[in-house]
Image 1 (spheres, rainbow, N blue to C red):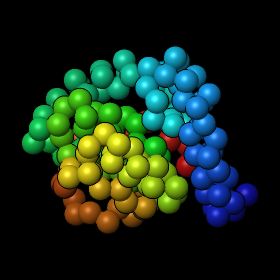
Image 2 (image 1 turned 30 degrees about the vertical axis):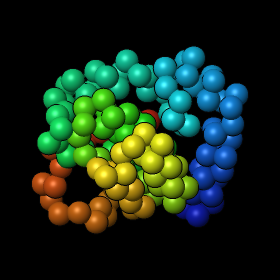
Image 3 (image 1 turned 90 degrees about the vertical axis):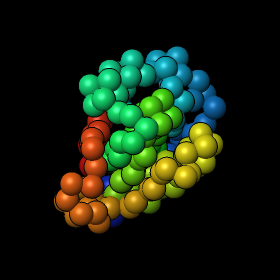
Image 4 (image 1 turned 60 degrees about the vertical axis):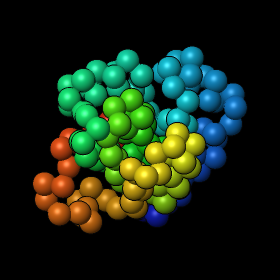
Length: 135
């Protein structure tokens, strides 16, 4: 399967995960409703936030963020700034929509990029989260 085929297949998942029934299941199982395509729970995300010691002056990078969970969730909980990076444009637009819904647009940037070629200088972030990434 080519990279374009994988990206299109993954992008199509966001159309399904946004359905009300899937959001209800996600909320019941994971404790959140971010259109997640992974398995990280709210409790695990809270633990990550504590371990990273995120604060309002922290800059967090969510690599392979897709829908933005757990990065956007952590930004909401801690007040930190967040950059979500995903190689799939649909992932970036999904995280942008969630950031708008959560009132994070002033401290969120969604970027379409691959982890091997991040468009940011070294040492730009205080913490990096990278969970449930398969691409």
